[in-house]
Length: 79
Image (cartoon, rainbow, N blue to C red; front, side, top):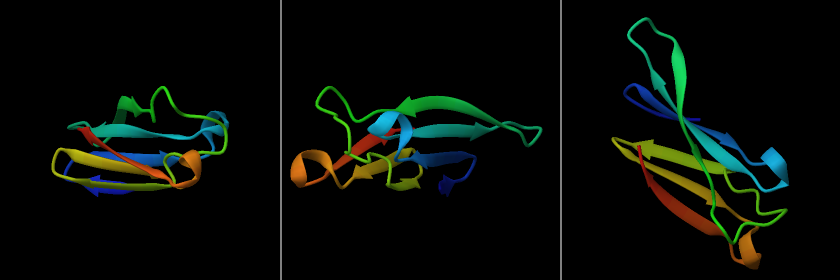
């Protein structure tokens, strides 16, 4: 989990066999709502484990997956 202010990025590296991450926003009452699903993209495949590493700072979320094409992948998303 990565948290910046009222935004959190949650890792899910085994979701669907490929992995992904989720972006949540905290509401004024304290509850959290899902704002986005962060996906690796068209080249994703089983075993990528995308979402194993997540970080967020301000409005920038970073998500990584070590298994992509044997070299890994890191993607940047706007929160």
